Length: 271
Image (tube, rainbow, N blue to C red):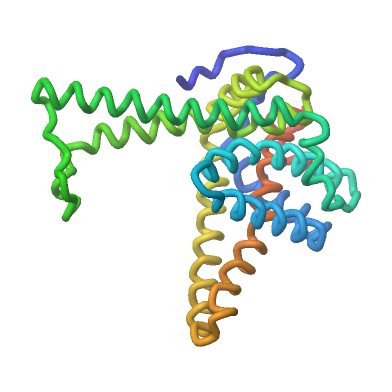
């Protein structure tokens, strides 16, 4: 799964970056955020709000939101590219994917859903088979404690690894479709290779972002409690805090893409 020697396209051959690149990516993302804080707050807030609203649609809200997310992420990649060039990205960049690569970007979202569904079905079938031959116990009808399902932890690990494999094919794909003109299938293959060649720095960057988001969550919770007596404002602090952090998350995806797929100089030299 983690073959470091796979070569797909010499023009876009993903490079393997060191563990420290994860920290460098986050630093560079923060620098770009500081270059254009207002445009990025507008873009991220609009993106966050649109995804929330889409997810609330009845019946198919989740499916629709997953399919259109890569289209927005393609536009966000263009906005990040503009920021690197020293320009202020307009909010309209968020919608560029709909004008240029809507079909392929939507396919990325569709393949992501199908891949996740396939993993869940496969693991469910495996669980049923193992139960039928007596290797594992059945799930309780009513879950009252984790003790009841602790024997299923290998199945849980297998499910998480399968879903991570699907996510690795998705991670870089919207950017590769939008900026490198790849088809959805090609982009997801390339994303898979780039992700696993750089899983260590990606893990470091993800852990650092998780710490930042957790701190933001704690701050938002405290502010929510202070305003709990005001119905219209009770949840506003959490929304504001998340919107302040969202640009860092969105920009970081482009920064690590640029270092893995675009730049030909070491991380320390250009970040």
